[in-house]
Amino acid sequence: MISKQMQQEIAGSSAIRAMFLEGKEMAKQAGAENVYDFSLGNPMTPVPASYNQAIIEAVQKENSLELHGYMDNAGYPETRQAVADNLNQRFGTDFAYTHIVMTVGAAGALNVVFKTILDPGDEVLAFAPYFGEYRGYVANHQGILREVKPDIPSFQPDLSDLENKITEKTKALIINNPVNPTGVIYTEETIQKIAAILEKKQQEYQHEIYMVSDEPYRELVYDKNQVPFLTKYYANTFVTYSFSKSLSIPGERIGYIAACPRMADCGQAIQGLSVANRILGFVNAPSLMQKALISSMDARTDVAYYDRNRQLIYGRLTELGFTCVKPQGAFYLFLKSPEPDEKNFVMAAKKHHILLVGGSSFSCPGYVRLAYCVSYEMLKRSLPAFEKLAEEYRNHL
Image 1 (cartoon, rainbow, N blue to C red):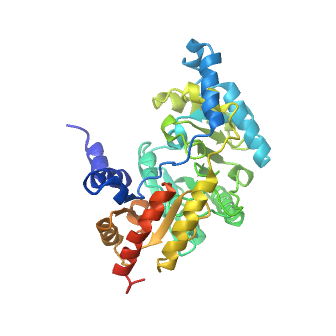
Image 2: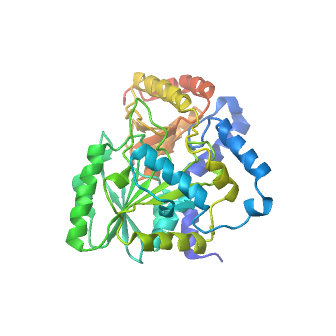
Image 3: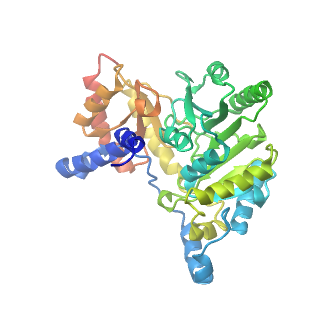
């Protein structure tokens, strides 16, 4: 018999993945062209040619035993230096390669950070709505996740609630920017206010409260918006990053942690991250992907593709009377359910072969998430189905 904890995890397994699998079954019955699956945030744009070429060159030029062998748990020094140089150039930071740890994606990075900083019973705060896996990542390391309410309808964080939720047990605050599932960007002013609250609470409780900045969508922004780089505003910050979205390589599982050089006991923190990388079983980030990144830090997928999708789906849904925040980044639209229980709305959408994810999966009931990282052609085909759905709810929009 498997553990009771894992039995609970299975029972609460990701609704997003379940919806994705349901869509596959629906496509078999109705035809793939008649199913409009907006459930999974799987990148749709091609991998930049320069990154593919860098992989080829690494395989051709590197000693194969070294290329596919172990390295320091923190990653290749030259890759870490490339990350540090890129961040310093773009954001005016002062990272050395020693402040960078290469990881198995952002998910691996978050687990490494929590393994490093959490003691049993420590609390981690997250702004709702948030990526549901955060709860599991914190629980993996015997922490407890606490939610901070959003300021609806802007979906900026409720800073009064943040201040009230911080206790002596608070060890960290997760910030996801741009936000999955809303596409909202937390502004520089908001970040400065958050940093001021954390500084005040650190003084009050006389221990570090870390800011953990989860940034897999940092490069996916629209309308000339900018994402504040958090180490500039708060010293006790870990930045976790994944190249999954910026390079369209989610299956390659490559990312990094950048620890702010001004962090308290920064050297010990870096040592902890490296050891955590090993003892969690990651050992090190994928070697080939690390080598290819050295010359590919500025490579980007086609953000304009997602912007075209954003403009189309946001424009048409608001014309039909649906309420949602216009995404500033990422590739998600957070739609207000026309009825209080969004599960009923999700079921109604399924009748039209539209697959959406309920906001309860992100600790924000009454809304649904639509991932518009799909083909433009599919998006256009889905519009008549949304029109029928809107007609069904015409008295509630």
